[in-house]
Every structure is written in structure tokens, then in C-alpha cells.
Length: 345
Image (cartoon, rainbow, N blue to C red; front, side, top):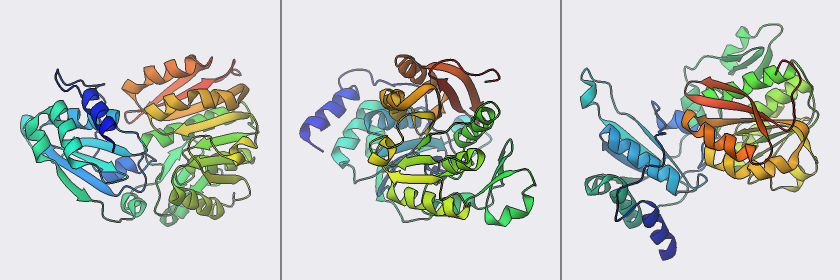
């Protein structure tokens, strides 16, 4: 990290004045593995920073890390360490994952500005243990149903019904099991879209294990192009497409956003999925608008409720309009379109 970037980070943290809190959003989750599972970057995290503190401090620390660092470089979550009868005495924890080893003095200075010197001194820096995140997170989880779509593991094959659109996902070193509210929201939007139209060109940005791309391929039986910044996720998506007999339809590539020749080859898309995070969704708005066909639709998710307004604003600035919103488990899924939708949207 350059000295100039360090200076900008510290200024952004509000040194010399009241610590700013960009918003009240905090990823309140039972365990970090589950929170990062659904494609929340950074994939391939190598280092972790931990802090045990009170709730208010945990919220400030998680917020400042999320707002300061690029989402491809760092992700943070705040959550209760344990439940107690006296809710005021509950201890909270913050865990922040980094793609590369963070600069310790700079990060401590950043946290000191946001949450005080005591919090900065209490930070614990460590390396991430190599772990099969999906295997850990899928253990004991039930199948996920979204209308006709049933997402399940091998052990739940017997639960598949005759008319189900079934997707089998096996554990792999990648992100995106579908148990997350944002992924289920996207699947429900897909079901709703399928009742009134048949998209011909589909794109899934941030595909993870390929759940949405596979679902779209099974429902519409058309080519679905997909991208992810993580090569491990792309490999898993390919493997899962083969497992679900849609390898000839699903074409995942390693790419940042929409920057890849194979994604350009499709021309205009009439359905785009982007289940990532608020900031990259806002940044991708012009690029998504550029590849969206007239009358095309975009399903956006990975949004906390407090992020919705800013994301809608970013797409409205591109001439796209919100048509439907779905909230599940604290996550919002948006259906946005270029032009009017058919009745029943």
C-alpha cells in the first residue's frame, strides 16, 4: 500500500474529526463462512483480522472496512459471539478477510479513527486456514426451494418431485450454495420471469458455483454466459454444470465484471443476473446498461435493505426502472428493466 493511499484511507476514516459511519449496514451472521459463501468477495482470502468488542464498536469497525477497501480485496462482518440472558452484556465480534496481507499500522490507524484507540490495539491479525467452505456450510442444511426450483445436495436426491427443476450442488472450494436469501431471491425472480417470457441471451455476473446460471439454463434451455473473478469458482461452476447436464449451455469465464471477449460475443442480453454487493452493483450500472437489449431485464441482489436506494438510483441514472422488489432474510432482490415489462411482472 502506497503512502498516498494510506493518507487517503486515514482521511476517509475521519481522522481529526468525528468518525464517519457511511451507513448502518452490518452483516449480522452466525458465522463468517456462511456470510462469505454466496459470492461475497474476497475469494481466495489469505488473512483475517479479528476483534472482540461491544456491538456499537463492532458495527463501526465493520462499516469502515467495508467502505474503505475495494470489495475484491476485503470483506467484513459483525456478529454476536454468544447469546446471554442479559442482552446488554452480549459481546460482539468483527472478522475481516483480506485477499492480501493488510498493512498492520495503517489498519490500526484506520480503526483508531473509526472506533478508538482501544479497538485498534485489540485487533488480532492472523492467516486464513485453508478450508473447504462449502463443505462446512452445507453440512446439515436442508434443500432450498424457490417455486419449482429445488436446490439440493446428493444426499437429498430422494426429495426431488416429478415437476421440479432440480439443481444438485456438491461441495467445492468456491462460493455460492444457494442457502443465502439473496440467491433464493434471484431464483424466485427467475421463476416469475419464466411465467411470462423466454429470454434468449442470458448473463450471470459473479456466478460463484453457478447456481443461477444452471437454473436459467435448465428453465430456458439457452446459452447462459457467466463470469466470476475467482478461477476456483469458475472451475466449480463448470463442474456443477456438467453434474446437472447443462454444460453445453453454461459458459463460465474468469472475468472482472463484463470484461471478456466471450461475454462480448453474445451482443445484447435480454436477461442479466448480478448477485454480488452494493458497491460493485453501482459501479457496473453503465456496463450492464450497455449490454442490455431493449426490453431487457436485470435481476440484482446481494443487497442489504439500506443499500437499495443507492443502487436503484445508479440504475435509474442509466435509464433503467425498478419493476419489482423482493426481501428475504434481510437481503433485497430487485428486478430492473429497460422499457416496459409484460403483464404479470
